[in-house]
Structures are given as structure tokens and as C-alpha cells.
Length: 274
Image (cartoon, rainbow, N blue to C red; front, side):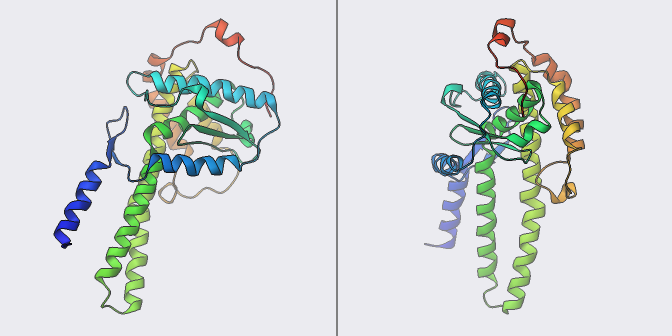
């Protein structure tokens, strides 16, 4: 196979793997098989320890159901191909770190440590809507695809320098790796987080949760302990950057807010969470 033919086939494969992100209209590359990612995620999800607090579990499931329904039905930013709420696995994970995640195939994990910051249903909705937005946008597939392309680029660079001394090749690969990380992987990861923040804000508003809670949540999250790297070295925008961007989006989110009816509220578990 000639190099020209190989390049043409690679270009055709890349074009076939392009997808438009719902709502934003951004083109993305999805080289990974979604069903394979879902199967891998299912194995990891099953191995995680579960919280023994039934009230916490019930509250997270109730909020998740409303958020998922909103993400499926939103006319501008939704994805009707998402599994319905009843098909999702939602679990409170026994882990003291303030974290949460949503996985391909319809799985949500909410760390018990997140309740330190997410102390209301509105705040829980901030977290869950953000994570569901990651699934809608297929950010996990996109990150895998970017790392695959970066790895292919490293192989191509190494092959192009095969007649050079080993030391020069290693130095060039190190520079390439740093450039790929700082110039591609980390900036895109931060963009994914901002994209999920925006869509998540609209999903929670449509689900009947107060959009202003998102700004308050990230301002509160910035007070969590721990050393955080500079933004350009991080996979996430800084908490203050996120709060400022969400503040700017509040007028649009408020227009999308759909108050929840009292009969619906009466069916939701309430009480202290820990």
C-alpha cells in the first residue's frame, strides 16, 4: 500500500468518525467504539464500593431521573438517543473525595464526599447535569480519540527520525509529548468541562432546579482544600473561571427554567444527607 493511499484511507476514516456535538454544533472526532467503552465502564462501575445510606441513594436517583429526562427532551441541546431514566444505573459511591462521574452506557456515580459541597437538591442537580452533559457530548470518546491520534503522531515522528541518534529521538519525542499535552489534550479537556457546564446548566433549569445554584456551587467548591495546579496545567478550568462563565449564562438559563410542580415535589425523598 502506497503512502498516498494509506493517507487517503486514514483521512476517510477520520471524516467518517466526525460527529456534531448536540447544541454547540462543534465537530468532534469519535474513533472509539461506544459499545466497547460502555462495556469497559460497566466492569469498572461494578467494582466500586457503594454507600450504605439509602436516603442519600434515593435523593441522588430522584435528581438524576429528572436531569436525564431533561437531557433527553431539551429541544435545543438534548439527545433523544440517551437511555431513559429507568435504564440508568445510579449509585452513591463510598468515597470521601468530592467527585462524581457519568459513563457511556448509562451509569452515574456520585461520591459520598460530594455531599460536603452539594448540600441541596439544586446543588446535586448541578453536579449530575454536568456529568450527564459529558455523556451527551461523548467527551470520553473524544478524549480517547485524541490520545490515540497523539500516540500515532509519536510513532510517525519516531519513524521519521529512525536514522538519527537515540538521544535526539528521545528528546524530540519528549518535546512532542509536552506539546501534545499542553497544546491539545489539556486545552480540549478544559473545553469539554466548559461545554458540560453550559449544557448542564440548561438541563438542570429544564428539570426544575434553580440555575443560580450552579454559580454558588462552584464558588463553594473553590473553598475545598487541596493544592490545585495552574489552569493551563489542569484538565479543568479554575473554579472561579467556571463560576464567572456560568454567571454570564444565567439569563439564558433562567429563561429555560421550568418550575417543578408541588405534586412532583411531594414524591421526592427529603431529609439530611451525609
